[in-house]
Image (cartoon, rainbow over all chains, first blue to last red; front, side, top):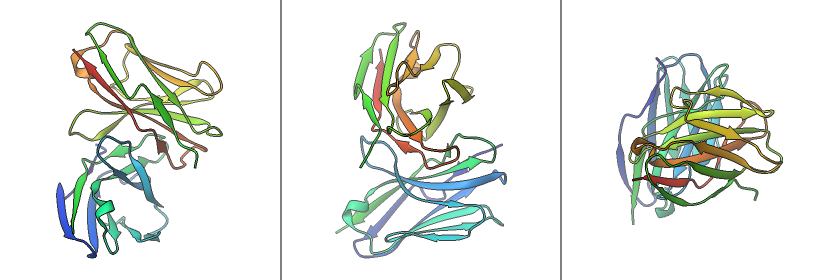
Amino acid sequence: GESVGLHLPTLSVQEGDNSIINCAYSNSASDYFIWYKQESGKGPQFIIDIRSNMDKRQGQRVTVLLNKTVKHLSLQIAATQPGDSAVYFCAESPGGSEKLVFGKGTKLTVNP
Amino acid sequence: EPEVTQTPSHQVTQMGQEVILRCVPISNHLYFYWYRQILGQKVEFLVSFYNNEISEKSEIFDDQFSVERPDGSNFTLKIRSTKLEDSAMYFCASTLSQGGTQYFGPGTRLLVL
């Protein structure tokens, strides 16, 4: 079946360190992947996305890596800041579908 | 920066009552979605809507649920007879094109007593 899961439910890092948040997906038909950030009481906020014809995409302080061979997605945050503290969700879009399938989320805590 | 808005932010209702959750998608977007998130769980897809009709729906979206775009700006989710298990955060999302980035609203927290 289609599912998106996360390896670690929580991640704690020091301010200034790099963070890596991982995600495994099971639907090989998925062709679009997105990372969202959710702060307490708010809706998911788009961070970065990647399509299946790419294996890496960079944004401002964030990089998404896609390994289709092992169905793995990761989000790297450089120089993590206290404002990065939130729950991070990966989501996949199965080919031919408009819906997003979300993972459970990883709670990132940045310690000053 | 344009954003999706939702009202109300919180809604408390009695079991069996009807509720309508409202969303104003980003103005030039054409595809609209509802998702829900039960406390502490992942976000779940409910329904997608395009060109005034449902394009896809999940198993959660049963006959108690309906969506409507009553005018050029609002997109609503109606739950006809709420159940305790409908308590959740409900998020609206919109996108400009099919398969494009979905932008989410801040959500409506629904509590069914």
